[in-house]
Every structure is written in C-alpha cells, then in structure tokens.
Image (cartoon, rainbow, N blue to C red; front, side):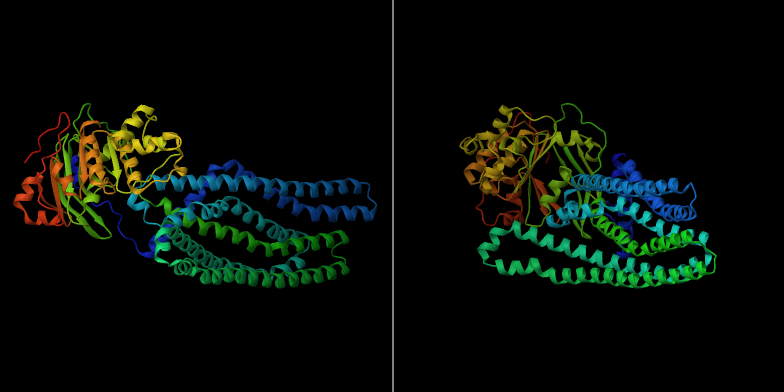
Length: 608
C-alpha cells in the first residue's frame, strides 16, 4: 500500500453491527473454531467416531446374532455352538469399542481444549491492546479456562451424538426387516419423540448461554475486586464488594435449576414414552408369535431391538453435551473476533535518525473522534514532549506513534517507512516503550528488565539500563540482586516504574516512547533519569507524555494538544511566552526559565 493509499484508507474501527448480526457472526466464528479444533485432532476424532459407530453396529448386530443362535440351539442345529461363540465375540467387541472410544474421547477433549486456548491466546496477544482490554481480566480468564475446556469437548461430543442416533434408527430398520407390524408399533411414537428432542435442544441452548454469561460477569467482578483489594480494605467496603461479586448467584442458581428442569422434564417424558412403546412392541410381538409369523429367536431379537430403540432417550444427554460445547465456544470465540495487529515485511533504512511523521492521523473511539487529522513531523534525534490537559489525547497519540494502535485514517512513518508495513520484529526492536504503570513480566528482576524481542541481553547491558533508570541501587540490595524472583520482591510504585524504564532503556531503538513514565518518581530522581536518557541511552527520537513543567522545559520540542487537536508546536520557551492557554496547562507551576536538557550526539534542531 502506498502512503497516499494508506492516507485515504477508510476508518479501520469496525463498523457497529446489530445484535442479531453480531450474534450470528459470533456463532459462525465459534463453529469454525470447533471445526479447526476437530481438524487439529482429525485422526483421533475420526477414531472416536469410528469406535462409537462400530460399537453401535456391534450393538445392532447383537440381537440378530443372539436370536439366530437361540433358534439354532432350540432346533439342535450343529451350527448352534459356532453362533454362540460369534455372539460372545460381538458382545466382547461392543465392550472393547466402548472402552477405546472413552479413552480416545479424553485425548480429543484435551487436544481440542489446548487448541482453542492457543487460538484464543494468540489472537488476544496479537490484537491491539485497546481491543484486548474491552473484556475484564476475569472474563478473559474464564473464556480461556472453563469455557475453552467445555468447548473442547465439542468434537468428541458431536461424534458421540451421531453414534447415539445409530442404535435407535438401526433398531427401527431391523424391526421392519423382522416384522413390519412390530416396527409400526414403535414408529407411531417417534414423531412425539422428535418434538420432545427439538424442544429440549432449544430450551437447553437458551439456558446454557445465559448461565455461562452470568459466570463471565461474576468472574469479571471478582478480578476487579482482587485488583482493588487495597482500596476496598481502606474504604471498609469488603461486605459490599462481597455482595456485588455474588450478586449474580441467584440468577446463576435460577438458570442452573432451569437447565436441570429442562433435562429432567425431557428425561421424564422420554422415560414415560419409551416404556409404553416397548410394551406396545412386546404386545404386538407376542401376538405375531402366537400367530406363527415369527419364531422365539425372532421375538427375542424384536425385544432387544425395541430396547435399543428405547435408548433414544439417551440422545438428549448427547445433544446437551453438544449444546453446552457450542455455547461455551461462543464465549471463547469472542477472543477470536478481536481484530489482529497485522504486520508487513518492510525494513527500516540503515542508520536512520528516527524521524517520525504523522500525516492526517484521525482516531475514533466509541463513535467519537479522539484525535483530529493530526499532521506532524518530529525530526530524528529530537525529544518531543506531548503536553495538554487530561483527556487531550496525549497517551493515544503516543500509542499511535509507537503503533500500539493504528489510526482509523491517516499514516504514521518512521524514517519514511509506514509503521504498518514494518515487519513485527523490526518494529519492536526499533520502537521502545515505558509506561506510567508498567507490568513486569518474567521470573526474575533481570528477566523483567531484559524482556524484549530477540535474544536476552547480556547481564552487563541489563545492569547498565538499570543504572540509567536509577534502579540499580535498590536492585543491588535485594537478597539475590538481579536474580531475585519478582514474586519475592516487594516493590513501591516508583521502583516498579524505574524497572519499567530500565526495560525500555535496555531495548532502546531509534524511537522511544515514554508515556508519563516518571510520574511516580521524585523530582531529583526524575531529573537524574532525564540526564541518563540524554547521555547513557542509545541516541534516538523520544516521545515524552509530559505532565511536569520540567519535562516540557527540557524537551527539544513541545507538541501542545487540546481536545485531540494540535494547538501549537514549538519550544517550551516559545509557547510559554506566546500562549496563555499553554501556561494554564501548568497552572500549578511557576514560570520556568530552565534551559533545555543537553541533546544527545547527533540531535538536530527542531524545525520551527
């Protein structure tokens, strides 16, 4: 895509869908995911289906073989013992096939669950952060754990449901072949049974879907409470939070009881209907035996086939497993509908200074425009501070600059290359981040600092980055220094922020985005970090979301944002002298005459 084409591209924010259309698309995505899971274990799934069908065939053959063996034995036919052995072999095969199907089912369930979890996790981590954050952490965890496990049972459950239909259907056909009158007695009740199963499937789907949604809501509230445990304790609202978390239990209980009522009602009706049909078949069979139309062995076969046909009452359980799996798959599939963060294959030019250019960047969130057609050039090697009141769009512009999100319209280029065209490894190697509330990922402190693309950095590089971020003194005092486990390391907010800065410095490329990354540091430490950033960290372009007057004063260039628009661009001194509104952004601070921070080697004067 050329820059001009990209600039004219339509908004990338997905157009809102009506609820029925969204539900239909989610259902299709869930079904595709289940098919993908079945294909992942295609051999085992086929083996489950084969074993269950073969077991059903053995069960169907058993009455005919048993009845014929009985007739031969009653007549004293020499072939009677052989048929008796054949009958034993059919029964043994039925048992063995059932055992094999059970073992394979466990394997298929496990592999399908793992496949769904991998698909969901890959899409979750490969999507834009703001899309991935739409669901509460508890809901996301529930989708990847309990609901993925239930959905993973789908392929094997479908195989068992298909096999569950074979014995009743085959038994009805066998009855037709043995004696049409006995078959007619059975077939008269099948329409009622079909209506019963249809109502069961419909009612179960509705109830299961609502039950699982209440589970998600409860998990989301629990995760929120766990994240805010200190706030809840300080506010003394533990009882109120407990009530809020458990507020869904009555509805959960209602839906659970409804599921059991539906299942129990269907089971009771089928348990009433099938014995009546069985007795009708027995009565007709007795009449036909008395009339000499069938023999004793055939009557035995008729009774056995009638019992198999009565087993259609087990079909609701098999269908319920499929319904639960599909409903759970919809919950997990919500992750699969997240838009992917795609990448190209382009590379940045060697030795580029890190010039960042935004052309007509326009971003929409929740139907409202947050950034309005921003065009901006930040020369390579420049430290640019993004300044503005709360809600002006500073963090969002920083996210666009480092491609943590894409603009809905417009283009962002680094050294002349559109960010969307860059290979993923190239983008993340040359674009670093530090956040106001960094999340530390890794087993040890060193691993948290070294987290990034490519091979792990050398211990000396990790320590140098920590020194630049002011983290080395407190890390050195830990029981095992940089090898201390994060789980065993109590950290203050400022210490966490310094480790986040160290991680960014360790992987500093030609573009470094600092999103209020020194907000928890005291003034002295923050200035030490700024000096280290200028002298000890790889030179490059810096985008700094600034709230402190000193941060803006020490930047080479200030971009003043107001309601999602660029109000003015210039040095801090220029904006301070010429714009009263700019001074009001720092209303709590005194006018500053602090000189700008020393520029790192190769830095260019910002264009006016």
